[in-house]
Amino acid sequence: MVTPPAGTASDFSATRIDGRQQPLADYAGQVLLVVNVASQCGFTPQYAGLQQLWNDYRERGLVVLGFPCDQFGHQEPGSDEEIARFCSIDQGVDFPMFAKVEVNGRDAHPLWAWLKSEKGGVLGIDAVKWNFTKFLVGRDGRVLARYAPTTTPDAMRADIEAALG
Image (tube, rainbow, N blue to C red; front, side, top):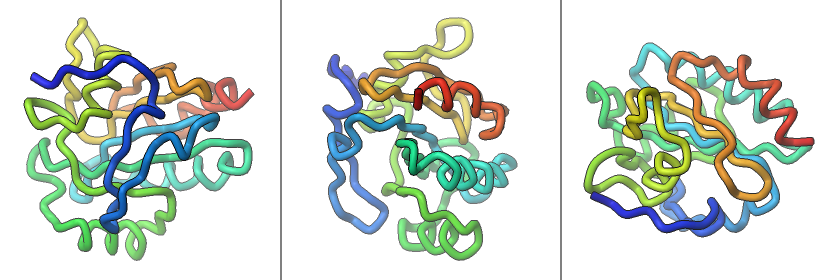
């Protein structure tokens, strides 16, 4: 079991989909929407809504961070290069995308272990249940909310606007 460190989102880094390391401290002071994504999921159409949130709020300080994950129904089988191409060409996504990660289990990325420890799921179960689980992180780097895969990006607008101030 991964033991997440205490702290804020700025304490973590992750590998971008192009292989570069990205310290999340670079996003300090901004509102983050962290999402585990998949290319072959019934929720994949949410990419359009996530991109719209990015378009509408990035000037006010929202950053959408996409983390491909293949732990649910093998719905993200491609390489990082294939995922990047799919997101860019097929989905029109230009918000920051990261290399494929695991969000549950022994090999869960430390960011995801921390996110889950900050905001548990339904019935006190911390595990991410499916693709397109979303975490809203405030300007202070603390988790404000966790959203189920069925929560559409548009349904989060009021919370995002409140977090942006």
